[in-house]
Length: 201
Image (cartoon, rainbow, N blue to C red; front, side):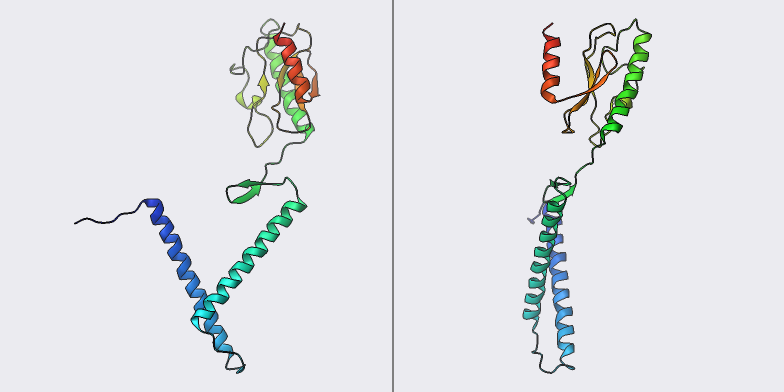
């Protein structure tokens, strides 16, 4: 005998809708019982039918939705950029590390790179996968869990060139480790020009 089946997703949605309707009816029945119970003390109150109780609950639900939307909008206005949209809701945007913390992290990577170069005739690692430098050292101090960009195949005796630098996610300049050991801040356009000059050599 043929039977009608639905997908698992549709089943979950029907369960959610059924649960909502049961809660809606239960709340309406409670409101109706409380209202009509008050009529013993306040005889002038009109009788509340189940239909009207459902209307009251629906109206209150819409008012609460409006209030929550206003709170969400005020929160975004008071803390611009602190929240980011995720689907139909918002979540706290990840907080970036301050510049001092970023500088310290890049300086730790600098120490490891120079230690590697001293044992390899002044040459830096050809890539970021060498076992002498842990993978965690290549991660920037940020919830995004991104890695430093690295220009392999350079040496200590080369004029100051970008060796390792942050991805452009902080908005206040990228910290760049140069082959002469300095850590400087560059804007994205300046860093791009510097890398292009070196590629053209």
